[in-house]
Image (tube, rainbow, N blue to C red; front, side):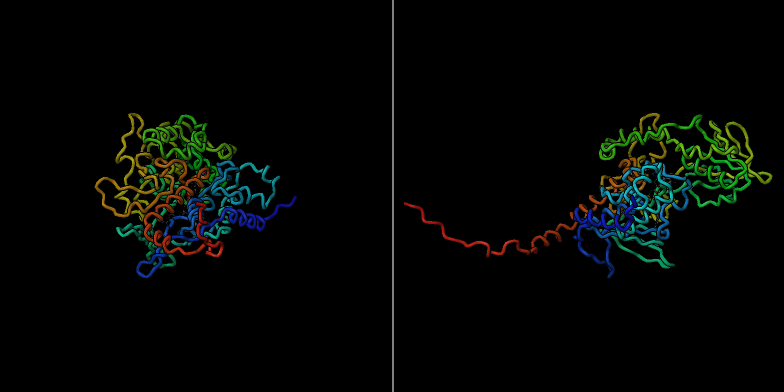
Length: 479
Ligand SMILES: Cc1cc2nc3c(=O)[nH]c(=O)nc-3n(C[C@H](O)[C@H](O)[C@H](O)COP(=O)(O)OP(=O)(O)OC[C@H]3O[C@@H](n4cnc5c(N)ncnc54)[C@H](O)[C@@H]3O)c2cc1C
C-alpha cells in the first residue's frame, strides 16, 4: 500500500481541527500602547516547546507571537549542536501533538513512508525529528518570527511587559501582556563548565553543546569529561571525525544503568507533581539527580565499536595545564596527556549567561531562598531552580521590587522542580503547553472582566424572534 502523503495528512488534520472546533476565534481585546499593537502573549523561543505553547494558545483564541534568534527551521539543538544518531525517546510518544492524532510524529512518518516502515523503525533519527517540527510549524501556520533575538524583558507596573528585540540589524520594542520563556534546556543559564576549564586556552576545550568543529580533532588525543548521553555523542563524533584516541574520563565507578525518570512517568506523575508538598518534590528530583540518567545503549555502542575509544571509570579530573604543545591533565588516577578536552558536563542556571534576563534575575526567587533540604540532600541544581507559582510564573524574592514579574512565565527545564516533567522534554510537552495555555487564557480573561462583562451586556443576537408563538390571555376558569 502506498503512503497517503503529507497532502492527505494535512487534509485529515484540517478535519480533526474542524471537528474539535479549533482554533477558537480571538476573544481578547485588541490593545495598543504608544500606537503599537500589544500582544496577548510573546514567547521567547520557537523550538519544540515554543511551538507547542504557540499552538496551544492559538487553539484557545489567544493572540501570540514566538520569537527565535535562529533561522527558520534551525531552532533548538536537533540540526545544530546535537550529535546523537537517534532520539533517546521512544518513537511512539505523542510529543507536541496536543492530543490531536494527525499532529503526531507517527502520523507524519506513516503519511510519507507507510505503516511497514513505521513498524520497522527503531528510534527516531535526529534530523527526521527536526523535519517533523518544521512540518508541525508549517501545517499549523504558527506565528513565529525567526532571526529575532530578545535581548531584554522588562515587566512594568501597568500590566505590560516590554521586550527589546534585535532583528535585521535594528533594535525595537514590543509590548506583551504575558511573556513565556521557552528558551531551551539551558534557557536560564548555559553550559556547566568546571572552573579548571576557564584557566585553559579556549582553543583547547569545548562544551558538548558548543558549535565545535569536530573535523579539527582529526589525529588528536581527545578527552571527554562525563558519562552521559552528550559525552557519548561527543566521543562518537570525535572518533568518526578521525580523532587518534578518545578517552572518556568518568568520575563514577560505574555507568548508571537505569533511567529512573522514565520509570517515574505516568499520568498521575505528570498531572499531580505540581501539587506535591515541597519535601516530596525535592526528594523525587534529588533522587533522580543522584541516580543519574544512563547514556542510551545505542550511543554507548557507537563509541565502543572504535578500538581507539577508552572508557575510564572512577576517574575524576582535578586540574589541567597546557605544556609543551599539549594538555597535561591530572586526574584522581594519575596524569594523562591530551590535545583537546570536551566537557559533557550539562547545563546550569546562571543568570549571567542570559543577558535578556538581567532586569528580572535579581528579583526572581529560587528554591534556596526559601527551602532548606533535609540533611544529606543538598543539591546545587535544585537549589538554583526558580521557585515558580502554579501559573508557571516567576515569584519575587523577599524584599524585591519588581512589579509585573508574575507576567513572565517559565517553560524551560529548570522549571521541573516546581512543576514536574511538563517543562520541555518530549514525553509531557503537550501537557505543559496545554496547562500553560489554559492558565494564560484564564488569567487574560479574569483581568479583562469588565470588558468581557460589557460584551455580555452588549451581546444582542436573538435566538427566537417573537414570531414563533402567539400570546393569549389565560382561559377563564370555570366558576
Ligand atoms: C542534545 C540533546 C538531545 C536531546 N534529546 C532528547 C530526547 O531524545 N528526548 C527528549 O525528551 N528530550 C531530549 N532533549 C531535551 C529536550 O527535549 C530538548 O532540549 C528540546 O530541544 C527542548 O525544546 P525547547 O523548545 O524547550 O528548547 P530548544 O529546542 O533549545 O529551543 C529553544 C529556542 O529558544 C531560542 N532562544 C533562546 N534564547 C533566545 C532569545 N533570547 N531570543 C530568541 N530566541 C531565543 C533558541 O534559538 C532555540 O531555538 C535533548 C536535549 C539535547 C540538548
